[in-house]
Length: 302
Image (tube, rainbow, N blue to C red):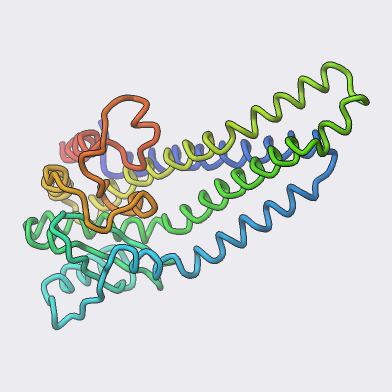
């Protein structure tokens, strides 16, 4: 029978398996390209650019996301009840109190961002504050604090770095191949097996970014399950978050400032009316189905 602790441990194991698989995939892809071109310079340069991009995102992603969503800072005197909830839960979770922002939108939703627990931000929508009861709001805030405590922002940075690395490397490989650099130059020196290997490398370059994104989405989904379990540990009341997710899912309209770039940050997909239940759509989703999350939470309460 699932419990709060076994659910969290199970999701942690699955997440690290996915991360390890991602790293093995990236190393294997780099090895293929390096062998075809017989040079590691492209690989090193691609890694440098990917990490440079990630460095910028790591230090400035919170400001970028807050600006994109139209979130505004709120002080304790403006909403003392919200601050008390966050402060009490932070004491329970053993975390510093993050900055709090409010998004002026009717849709109930929330997200956490920031590079670490000392530079974290929690943003909630006006709709969330208006529609949820206190225990439900506590469940949502605890979920977001769980993302902070579980270092999900850092994990997302790592996966985005790897995805960026794969995309850049694949793009360069295809461009150089189309210009006849590397592969074309050495065709006369290779036997048929080597030519087939080069063709497989081109196929890998085409499919690699897609596979990398699928792994990224899978990691995002696992982090949501883990944050649900950890948030339930903080409140000791899984039903509160389950009820909150039901209310959040029942709201039919998208957020005004929602976009694919920020959708994965929210507790639930802010792009309403675009979710589908087919297995293919689930592969490309950054969130697990709400029904599965609610079911897992209620199993914890048994």
